[in-house]
Length: 220
Image 1 (cartoon, rainbow, N blue to C red):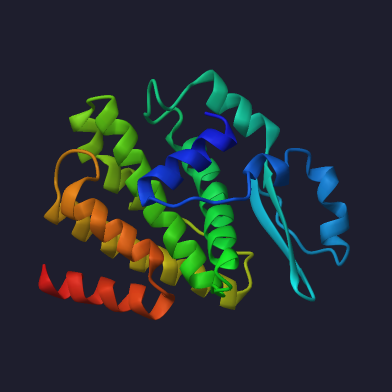
Image 2: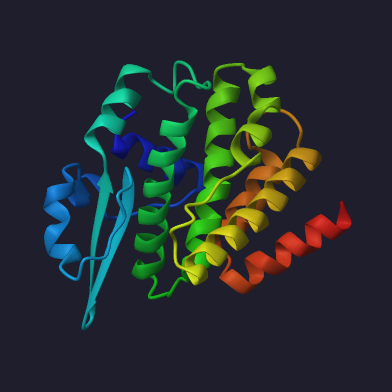
């Protein structure tokens, strides 16, 4: 799948329109990121959203590794989503999720935190993968989606303590929420009450997101 197709997939899932076309902000050669990382910061990762604030304007670039995109083109997730391409799919969706969430909120002059950015991306991986699997009629694969996404997550030990804590918190909140969704809506594509809940969750600010997760987990 191409980045624009992934962007449209998430847009349709959440019933949103993002005016910014991800193709206009996409970078596939890491060397082109040098002006964004003049201070030596940055990750050697296949996906990275870079944001630069200047006055009233927000500069954004989304890096997705060219080899990653080529693999997704070769093993098309819409035709088969399995252990061979799930990790690549999730990496690409994470970047697109970050881009969509920042662009959609910026258009509404809403600020977002890094925690909610990471948390929403984890939910997007689950919801969008479940949607694709339902289209493929892969009921068995859909049942195994949660453990594949959330079991045994490993984080880079070289991350700064605050960054590592943020990733762990976002992952933990998203994992509990997706487990609750799976328990309450065990089969099929996101639709009906599940789809309405996902769309409300997407639009909610960080405190409301966290409160909702705690509420549904306690109720289950």
